[in-house]
Image 1 (tube, rainbow, N blue to C red):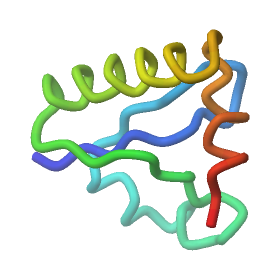
Image 2 (cartoon, one colour):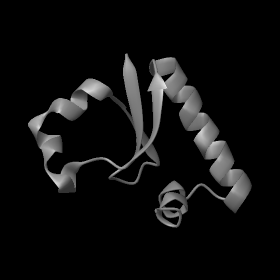
Image 3 (cartoon, one colour):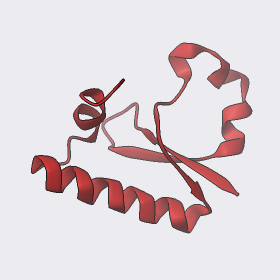
Amino acid sequence: MIYVISLAKNKDLLEIYHSGMLKQKYYRKKANMPYIVGIAAGYGEAVTLVTNILEDVYQLTGGYDVKEFFKTRRA
C-alpha cells in the first residue's frame, strides 16, 4: 500500500496516487510522468504528508504555490 504524492498537472496543488497506477502505459511516456515530491505507506500517511508539505511551503514562502516552490528547488 505505497502511495506517491506528486505536483498536480491541473490547478490543484498536489495529487495522491497509489503506486500501482504508475505501471500503466500512460506513465511510460516522459511527458506523462508525475513529478513526485513524496512517498507514503498508506493513504492516511499520504494525506498527512500532503498536509505537512503544504504547511512547510506556507511557512517558508507565505503562500501555497507548491509548484513554484519545488520548481526553484530542482537539482
